Image (cartoon, rainbow, N blue to C red; front, side, top):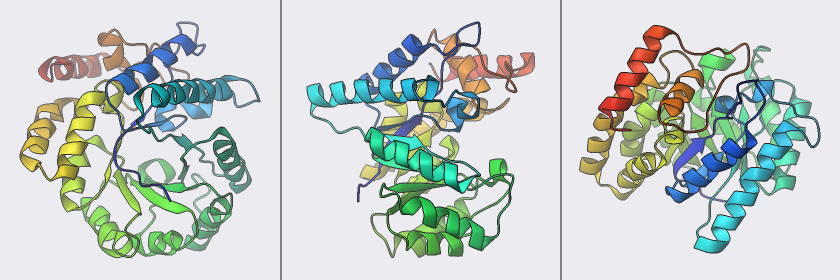
Length: 304
C-alpha cells in the first residue's frame, strides 16, 4: 500500500466572473503546485467546492480530474518524481461514495478521500459499514474525519476498527484535537506503521509532525506550496528548529485562511497574489470587508 507523507494541496476550483469553472486557471494552479515542489494533490475535496460542481460524465468534475492527471503524468515523466493524487470521493450516500471511489480507481488515483457521512449522522456501526463498502472497491482509502462539517466525530476506537479493513491507508484528521491525533498515532499507527496520519488543519501541522504524524492536506499550500512542503519535510526530517521557524512565520495566514470560511478566504488571498481563483458559487460568497483586512495583513506579514 502506498505511503502518504509530506504536504498535499487541497486544490481550489478557480471560477470565472460568470461562475463558470476557469479550467485554464486550474491548469496553471496545478503546474504551479508541481513546479513549487508539492508532495501530492487532492482535487475534488471540500476546498474545491465539489458539491456545486457538475458531476455528469464529461462535465466539470471529469474535466478537472483529466487536467490533474495530464499535468501530473507529464511532470512525473520529465522529473522522475512520483506525485500522489488523492481524489475526493465522499458522500453521505454510501452507493455514491462507492461510485466515486470506483471513478478514482479508474482514473488512476493513488487513493480516494472519503469523508464521514454527513447530515445523516449514522451510528458507529453505520460509519463502519460505510467505510467497509468503499474499502471493497480496491483503491487505498484516506478516511476524512471532520466533525465540524459532518456533525459526527470518528472516535479513535472506531477508527482503529476501520483501519483493520483492507485498503484503509490513513486518515485526514481534522477533528481540531491534537490529543485525538496523538491517540490515533498511539493506537492505530502503532499497529499499522504504513497508516498515514495527516493533519486537516494547517496550524496543527507542526505539533502533529512532532507527535509522529505524516504531514498535511493543506489549504494554505494553494498559495504557498513550497513553504508548506518545507514545513512538512523539516518535521519529517526531525529538523524542528526549521519547522518551528516556518510555522510561526506562517501563523497569520494559517488563521486568515479560515477567517470567513473555506475556500472563500484562501480564494481572496490567492486573488490578492494574482493567482487564478476568482469567484465562488452559492451558497458560498466572497469574504466580508473585515475578513479582507485580516487576510490582506496576513498575506503581507507572511511575505506572500
